[in-house]
Each structure stands twice: as structure tokens, then as C-alpha cells.
Amino acid sequence: MTYRCPLHCAFCSNPVDYMRHRQELDSAQWRQVLSQARALGAAQLGLSGGEPLLRDDLEDLVGHARQLGFYTNLITSGVGLTDARLGALRAAGLDHIQLSFQDSTRELNDFLSSTRTFDLKQRVARLIKAHGYPMVLNCVLHRHNLAHVGAIIEMALQMGAEYLELANTQYYGWAWENRLGLMPTEEQLRTAEAVVATYRARIGKRCRILYVVPDYFEKRPKKCMNGWGSVFLGVAPDGAALPCHAARMLPGLTLPNVRTQSLHDIWYHSEAFQRFRGTAWMPEPCRSCDEKERDLGGCRCQAWLLTGDAGRTDPVCDKSPDHASVHAVVMHGRLADHPLAPHRPLAPVPEAPLVFRTDA
Ligand code: FES
Image 1 (tube, protein in one colour):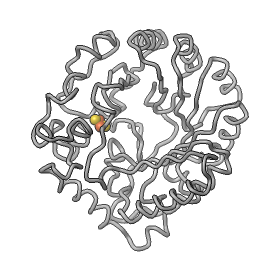
Image 2: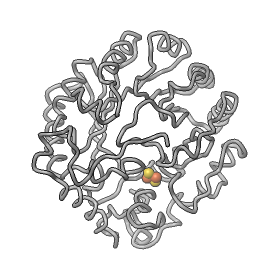
Image 3: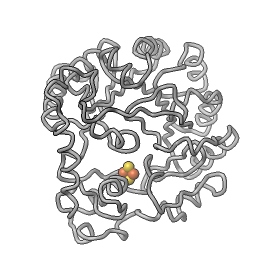
């Protein structure tokens, strides 16, 4: 809904050049987009940013979406989520809220987001519960907080979380810029995975924990977005229609815009949504691979970042001729592994200082 955000996270999902796309859709344009999306059959609406609470028409748009029959989910840092706004969002029919936090410690939470928001998030979590919403928490994991995963789960349980999403960093946008400072070692990942498994066995259904592993450490790529132009359509704050959140960075891809084209046209006829849909676009080794329907060639943005060509097989696949490029990125993370880094989470490793999102 907006790229604006009070936080400045080192793994922000905004495009690195997001300040070039400042002209936001107005309320009437958003209403039209939502109506068109519902007419196309869309059922789930994720309201994200940036920080969507910076839009003062958020409650109106939630109300419109609810009237249309959407299931609505607000993805927020919690900054600006007051008791009054929660009441208004509840009255408008908001179904679900996902609150993000950065770590179980105030120091790291505030360092990673470049803001003092740790205490605020605790207060907002209590408010969300008080308004009758299930507690759904999200924490992005990386080399600086993977060792805290047990404490993060404990904190979520204390906050009454019913769902906890532990999402290892996906390396696009700002996280790609910071990949050397954020990349964990495989050992860190596997240790954290074992801690999660222990908690899952101990707490059962009290809190459902999702643990998303970065596919850099796998041999097969993820079926990104469940397939390009398959089930997901994103609309950026300026109206650009996106086959995936990161597609804006792909060169040579002309993104259609909801200001000038209907969503129906965009989904069925635009060049951008057709480009990597299905299997016809695939090069070798995907084309003749008997697993091509399973992962649909993996992630186009990852292919671009690692090979400079969005049309190549995702290098995460060990059948890809570019597979070594993944190892190069992962190994850099390892080489940057200062012996004291795990015990000094506040100090980014000297070889890889973090770069924080700026509004310049
Ligand atoms: Fe763009 Fe995977 S993030 S296709």
C-alpha cells in the first residue's frame, strides 16, 4: 500500500530504489483495484508495505474489501496501531493481523530496525489480543539472531502467540545488499532447526511454528510464488502490477500499471505475467527435466541476482550450470564469520557492515 515506513530494517523488502516510485494510488483507485481483483476471483487480500498503517484510508479500504467478500490480513510492524485504530479496523471487518518483530532482545530488535520499537511491539501485541485477534507473530532470521531462536519462541509463547513464523531471510532487495552481513552458516541454520523441532514436540498445538529455510542451502529451488502468474498478483503503491514482490528489479520486464489497464487484462494478457508462466519459457536443463512441474524452474529474481539472466534455471538447483554461484554467496557468509560474532550480535562482522534503508 505504501513504501513509507517508520522502520529501517537491514532486510527491508522494499525495492532498493523505492523512492523513485513515490506516487501512491489514491483511495478511489485502490477501491477500483480491489473490486476488479474480487471480480477475477481473488479471495485473500494481504495489506502490506512499507507500513500500511501510514495510510489513513486503511480502515475504509478494509471495509470495502470486506464488503466485497475478501479475507483480509494486515501485515504490520505495529507502529501506529493504537487501541482506537484497532477498534476501527475490527469494526471495518479486518480478519487477521500479523505482527513483525526482529528479536527477543531489545538491543538487537532496535538495532536491526534502526528504531526503538521493542517495547512498543510488546504493547501492541497485548492490544491485538485484547481485541480478540489470534496472535500471529513473524520474525526474520539471519546470522545475528539465529542463536536466539529458543528465546524468540519463549517470548512468543509469553505473548500468547498462536502462530509464529520464523522466516529465514530471503535475499532480495535490501537483504541482497546486506547478504554478507546477514548470511548464516549452515551449522547455525541446522542448530536452530533442531531447537524449533524440540519446541514443536514440547508445545504441540498451543502454538504453531513455521520455520522457513532459505533455499540457498538446498539442492532444489522453491516453487517461487507457487509459479509465476499462477495464483499471486501484487499491486505496488504506485499501481505497478507485480507477478512477485521482487519483480520490480528485473531488467527488461515492463510492468503493467492498474492506472492504465484493468487487472483482467494484466493477468490474462500482459507480457510481464506471461513471460515465465507455465513451462514453455524454460531453457535447459529445466526443459527436459522430469521435476520441472514441481518447482517450475525456481525463482526468476534469484536467477537474475545470481546469474544476470532472469530466464536461466534457478542456480539453487544442483542441476543448474550456475550452481557454484550459490556456493560463492554462501561461502562469503562463512568467510565473514568472525569467531566472536555469535556472542556479539550487536556488532556486525567487520567484513560486512549492514546498510540500512534510507529515504534518500
Ligand atoms: Fe521474484 Fe521469486 S522472488 S520470482
